[in-house]
Image: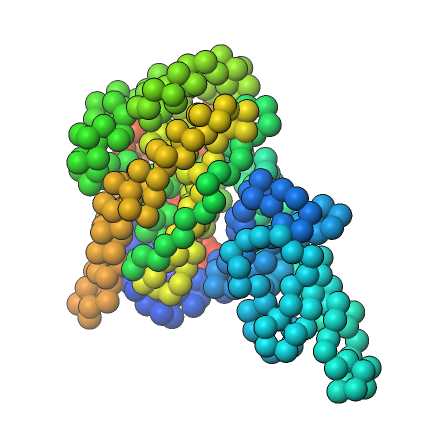
Length: 422
């Protein structure tokens, strides 16, 4: 398997194969080696604030039910009835004390315990041990600054070890003011005909496409002045474990050109600078991806994305808007509207990206096409480990340094390396 993977991704020489975006066998290996092992983002705690609140999502293609039980504890289970494997909860979110399977009526409490089974006394002769047939929990569940993650691998390292040095950058996105952030406006979900890795790598480090693919959105003012006249400052930063950040210059304008937002950011600047510390004088995080499929953006809009795989050529986008919890209502609403205009399902930036990702996904389907290698060598040899930035940083703001490190991690996971080897 290692030899095969090395022929698919060669980050040391700046090549990847078109096959990784198209082949079913590779995709199925990803479900086993990546999505069944890595820490995956589930939701933000503000999405299930009260006892009984729940939402449904995925880890790979495994359906997941996330609940806050009667005691306030957050849990995550396979969203599958233990009787015949039917989808247990069909709703996206809500509040419930129990979940009852539509097929045969098995009922589970919001802490996962099997509460009731029809005909338990007569058909089962009271011989079914209900204590053994509760919902299947994830192996590990943890959170960081309100972001809830889970893994099905009991041998995976603790969440903080998995995140490593990317935590400061997460703080800048999700914890720059006292009280952190909250998710507003619900979740947008859509299906795109593209491989999940393409949007992940795009948010991970692709500043190269912005001035070309998004030129129309930029010239109409959606992107802010920094996008049409970049300062030349900024870097792409790989903090390890496949996690990657795009950062602009410390003095670059990175907020949407919306009066309420500009005024708000000016008002809280001193507070944010103090809270975030000296690194704020070096860079201003703009976008990023936590390996494998959780991305975030804070300049054009304050959005997070989960790229849920649905086959080698299909991805479900789960998109949420986050705002500082301490922000006034009118500012939160301004951020929500800006997110819809730019990165909603019909947003100006969203449409540009969808078309590109679909085209890239289809390139590996043809007999001759799948023999080709793709070039991710931009900036190779022009990066260095920057202790102040806690990662491998590019010398110039546009580079494929992050792409190479993202696919290096992908190759390591796909080759079956143990966590100790990783």
